[in-house]
Structure formats: C-alpha cells, structure tokens
Image 1: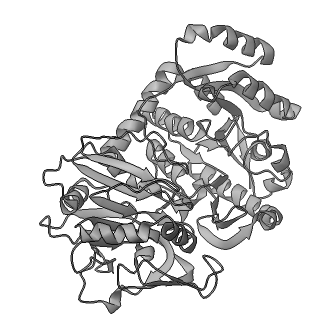
Image 2 (image 1 turned 90 degrees about the horizontal axis):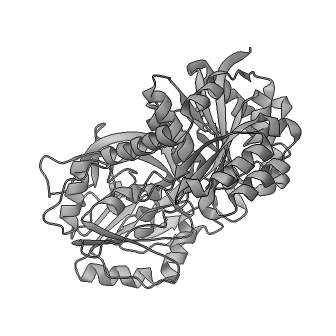
Length: 506
C-alpha cells in the first residue's frame, strides 16, 4: 500500500542547531493557518521523555511539537528513542516501548529492525495527517553514521522528502557549517535541500547581508530567513540542561537540585526555574552545595550510578543537616528511589550492582523489574497546606517498584482518580516522594508545594500558560523573520511516499 502525504524535513548542521525549536514553531504557524499537521522524528537520543495518549514513550521535544500543532501525542511521532545509560549503551524504546539495553555496536546490528519501525510509524502517521514536519538528528554530515541512516538523509531519500538546513550562527562559522555540510552530501542529497535557515543571530541584519548574498550565489539555494536570538526563551528541552538559568538573588525561596550525570526528565523542574519567587540553582559536579529551603532530587536513567555520584559529592551528609535545620526535600522518580533504604536490581537492569544502599531518609525500598510503568494520571496532592487538595496531572515512567504499602502509618503523597496512591510523605512532613512527572505543572499544586516548602505568600504561576506563550513567541518570530509562504509551498508541493517496503532503500 502506498500513501501520498506532504512532508518537510528540518535538518541541522550540528547538534543543538535549533531543529526542535524550528519544527515546534512551524507546527504552530501551520496550525494558526488552519493546516492540520503533526511532528515526526525518526530517531531521537534523549533522556527527557513523555507518555503518549496511546500508552507509550516519546522524546520530550516531540511532545512539545505536538502541543504546538495541537494534536494528541502518539508513539508514532518518535518511533525510535535511545535513552543513554552509559557512554556506550542505551535503552532502546521502539514505538513507545523498551526492547532492552543495547551497546552502540549491538544497536548498529539492530538498525534494520529499527528502520522498519520508523517507516511503519511514518506510514501510520501519514494515514492520520496530510502534513508532517520531520526533525532530523545531529547532522546529516556525520560520515561514520551514514550507512543504514534512518535519522537524516537516509530517511529523507527513502520517502522522497524535501529538506531545509538549519545552522546556528551563535556558534560561529555559520557559512563554513553550511558549505561544509553540503560538501559531505551526495548530489541527490544536496538537491534535496530546498533552502537554509540561519538561527540565533544577534545584531544588525544588514551586517550579514553580504554573507547571505554570497551563500545564495555559491549554492544556488535561498536563505529562507534569519531568526534572531530570543533572549529568555524557555522551551521544554530535548535533553540538554538550560545553561542560562538566571539567579534571582532577592527571591524569597531558595531551591537547589543536583545535576547528576544521568539526570532524566529534568523538565519537571521548569516551573520552579521560571517561578518569579524562586531562586533556583543546579548544583554541578564538584560544586559546593549552597544552603536552600527546598532540595529536589529529579529523575535518573541510571539510579544506582547517580546515587553513587550523589554520595561521593557529599549530598548524603548535606541532606541530613538540611533536614535537621528544617529544610524540605522532594524526590521524583529516580530521586524518590535514592531516598529509600535500598535498591535491588536482581536482573541487572540498571547496572552491574545487584544491591545498593539508598540515602536512608525514607523507610521504603525499591526493586527493579523488566516491565516499565507508562501511565498518564490525574489525582490530588495530599498536603495540609490547601483544602480541597489541589489537582495534579502528569505521567509515570519507571521500572522500579517501591514497597509503599508496607508503611500505612505514612500519608501517600498523591491519591489518583482511580483511587490508587503514589509516594509517601515523611512522618515529620519534611520529605515528599512521588513517581509523578509533571508534579509542579498545575498552578494550585505548585502553590501548595511552595507553601509547604516555607513560602507563605505565593504568587500564582500558571506554567502551562507560560509554555503556551513561549510557543506563540517563537511562532510570532517565525512569521516575522521567515519566508513562511515559501516554506509552506515547499511542504505542500512535496509528495512524500510511504510504504511497508520502503525501508529497503536505506
């Protein structure tokens, strides 16, 4: 069966060139124009993920892009997700579900199966949406990864998809990046590129014009726009930590979180980072740990390894002192597991350690199982700071199971709408633990948690509205600085082909 759909792929000269942001912005621009569309990323490597309505796991960037397009999240928007758990290995998520851990060489051998999943998902998505914006991964000029490529030009060539190439001028050498990338491509791949977008430009565009004219003359390809550097822009990160967290020295509440090596779903903390009354700080490797009102231990893709790191950095003694002086602690997912008595891994799912002592600050223990919990949930936060209890919305995504039920004397952190409970609150009301990602996203829940942490007068902060405003900000910028009609024409004049057998082209 062959289907015809309109597709446009955004590729980048480098990692972090802005591909995810460009796709998100274009998704919203098209949505504003009444053009129903969906995002697609064949292969993603990231530790920030989301749970879809169809009960699977995709990269956080694709979730944001779906929000921008105002369409439901689907596992087929990101059929291959690689979640690194070491320098040479990763958990492989195929169409939303883990197939286990593979090292780099094993994954190379597994690629034909991954490719089939990619093209199957693209076909399924094409049956639902007539316009698909595709995001590449890394750079198409990575020669060592060209064989069997499903992330960049290998995919574009297989489905006959036009490409726009994005370069980040803030890194320097933007023209060399663009020309060098073209030189690494085959003739058919170069012909597939329909134009360029230059991202993160600071200054007067007139000072760049000579270079733009030279680039268009040299390549015979149009520059479809120069996007300005948007100061203070904050979108859900695909993987990297936002390095430009602005210290708010006069803020009444100090919040810190350890930046451990395998941190995952750190986007959970975005509402804290953006809240005007919070001075937030990531505590990096070998950095001194500052005093704080609230410490948040976020998720981890390798809990035992990160727990060892945490202890080596002096956090165990710090947290004990923090509690003695009345401080509060929140542990989310992997952070929850670290706060318990012990972690058991009989099947070696997390590491080669079968048993690790936790921080010992909560009574429960955790055991890792092959099956992963993937659930979207709504519930009520069980804190005494607000009545009725505020609503929370989010998702669980974990393999560890903790024995909360053995401690009925402790209050559960959350009661879900299905009457199940999650996490525990310590007897002295100083520690809250939960598996729920998105804990801080709802305004009333965030207010209640900050009251609990010691902030008496909390300014209401609607993070969901904040995220929506950020998406609209980039879309406004795109409509002003990109050749939108030309880009829409490239998309709608394309005739991308999908089929069950297309993967033999890769």
